[in-house]
Amino acid sequence: MPTKARANLETLYRIFTVPEAPDSTLGAVDQAITADVAGFLQNHIVAMERPLEEIEASFSSVTIPEEPTYVSDYTEFVKENLVAQSVHTASPGFIGHMTSALPYFMLPLTRLMTALNQNTVKVETSKAFTPLERQVLAMLHHLIYRCPDEFYPSWIHNSQAALGAFCSGGTIANTTALWVARNRFFAPDGAFRGIAQEGLARALKHRGVDGIAVLVSERGHYSLGKAADLLGVGRDHLVKVKTAEDNRIDLKALRQECQRLQDQNIRPLALVGIGGTTETGNIDPLEAMADLARELDCHFHVDAAWGGPTLFSDRHRHLLAGIERADSVTIDAHKQLYVPMGAGMVLFRDPTAVSAIEHHAAYILRHGSKDLGSHTLEGSRPGKALLVHAGLSIMGRKGYELLIDLGIERARTFAGMIRQHPDFELTSEPELNILTYRYCPAAIQHLLATAPQAEQARINGLLDQVCQLLQKHQRESGKTFVSRTRLRMSRYGEEITVLRSVLANPLTTDEILTSVLSEQCEIVRQPEIQALLQQVWR
Ligand SMILES: *Cc1c(COP(=O)(O)O)cnc(C)c1O
Image (spheres, rainbow, N blue to C red):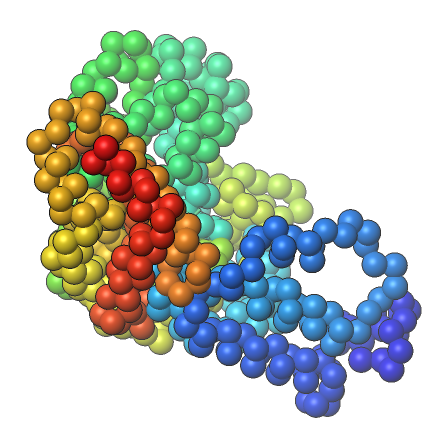
């Protein structure tokens, strides 16, 4: 960097050229930051105790600095205010969310991706990355649909088709899937030029229906609500079907809801099966849902944002049986493919399905071009497919299988610990690597089992407060972390607050799991929580 920070062309020029000497200031800063990040990643503490309000103070100035500054000065700020205050999502004690550790090679490859700065919206800015992305989509398509080898050569690089769409995450993947479903349902037909052209009001009129609906279990991800809103389905017509005790969709209730909609002349546009619910990790009966979708002649989407990579495991693949009958499947790469944040995919069984959302423009995305942007919701996008490709190539199917098997095994171990512990109640059995539980000592469990409903509700209300305080204190003390959510439990006929654990970090040990529970037992000894527990007994 220049000896004096100046806003002039020379400085600008230097900022955008690669520093020549490897020991330049920028190189040194780079090394320092890399070392800090590496140290940060190795730190097993989950978060610093500093409250958010205090951190906000470092980010409160609204004036854009008038004068340039040295990169080294800026990185001091980054080290102090960002690196040091970030959440240690890579910590093996951070077992509360779907964000966990990354394979080390993702960091240098992300730098490479950034350095190349390819824009995968069009071939003119992403040669090599476009076929790479198409290959990655084909690999995932093959993982799900297992089409014969002869199937792929005619589709993989075909400008008229796409085996899927790459995007920033599960939300866009789910939205894209339902967008395709909607546009196919309201496809051009005679004088009607399709919903994409004529809009929803005319489309409904053309089909003679009073509305369209999407059906999913009450464990469905909130992204479906956003999609229902955007696509004109309406949140009222995102029908949340109740689940049974095992957190899977109640098929009888699903049929009843479909009937109710049809009686109102509302057309079920899509059934959404969940391949690993966000909160409890359970998998819907996909085969039965595929049957029903066929019977209703509607789109069948499987949201396997979390659980999709279970397909890598010989032992557990069967849990997703029926996924190959889905018209579309969502898989998040930034979850169990262990790619950095911002990568998701939707795969389509029929590679011509995306023609329903095709978009063309004059200067790019021309007809017949292989531009990926002609059928993605997003425009400019980074070459994140490289990172998925790297994971698949370096770790291989067996590497991912190991990760999946380990996670499921560890969740079973943790469930066993909770079941045996006199002070905890397991609130959902792990099917994959996610489980929920709550602090509820054996004596209170017995009391609840025989209490009349009003008394159950009172006690559960107190336990909810205990759970909330417990989770908050654990998060603030920063040693280990679990999240919390609210679930309607058929056992109690009402929503209760539960702790949620996601076991995706291969470095999480049984000792850490034991320490999570012992830390929780320690926290509940605080007077504030003891007072609540006393009230249970009045
Ligand atoms: C995480 C998740 C999503 C949303 O994905 P984002 O990447 O956060 O947009 C959708 N569905 C399920 C089941 C998920 O677990």
